[in-house]
Length: 159
Image (cartoon, rainbow, N blue to C red; front, top):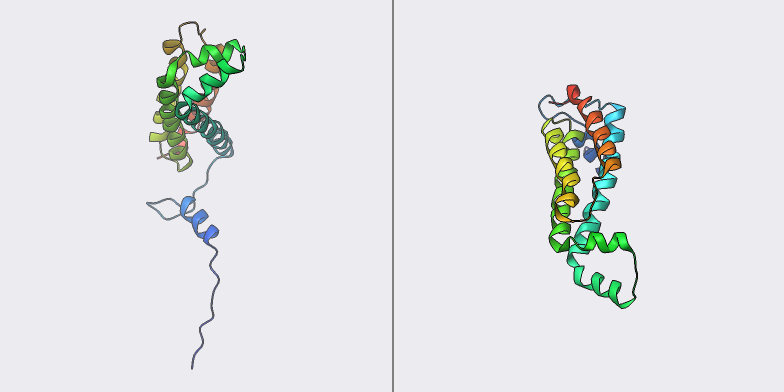
């Protein structure tokens, strides 16, 4: 009787190989370090923004009641809350598109750059359009511009 040598398969190794393999050529993907760093920061930032926008959207009335009951006079928070529930729902959707774009760029697909860039432009415009007293976010424009430029400089590695 012949006994087969059982081989342990680590599911994490299989997933890593699947994610880090080019679908067309089945060769390992070499992702530039700068692209890795940008994507990781985007995963973190967009992920947190998705969570916070969805949380506030779903509990908007409760948050507003708490702010009024405890008389928490935080002008910035009150200004952002003046955007209403639609502001947070729209933010949730835009940050989801931004995250989807980063995932596509992580997989070295150019479509991700376009998704990310369009989402970031709308994210910058969102408070200006929906909140009357909101000033143009100069720091936000600089940070978003730096990320877009960083991703743009890595387009040559994407399909």
